[in-house]
Amino acid sequence: MATAHERYALLESVGTWFDGRSARPREVVVRFGEATLILYDEAGVPQAHWALASLRALHDTGGRDTLVLVPDQDSDERLTLNDAEMIGAIREVCPELMRRKAPRGSLRRIILWGGGAVGSVLLIVFVLI
Image (cartoon, rainbow, N blue to C red; front, side):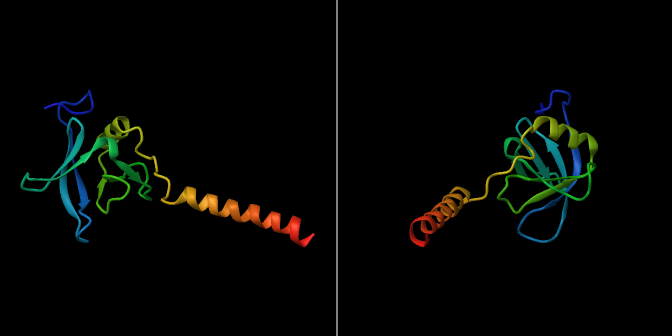
């Protein structure tokens, strides 16, 4: 079995997974695939496949020895890893791990506020002076 990371034929670790539907954390085995992280329960049944290209890291107060991942920025699922080797491999393979999506409606908000500012200046210059 090949992995996305060239140094490893097989790379797996234990993590804590929150499925986004219940508040109960679940211990899972996280396995590095060719283009995905695969989360297995204790019986070895796959519970989730997360595309490496869409993985995002959340800012966590746990420090560098902990990594909290989500499958994409809009997901309620999250995975906490403490294995330094797995964290290092994920950071190497996923260069956009810390990239954030612009908040929805940002451009519209900028245009509205900019238009309001221009309108205020025009009102001051042409009506009040």
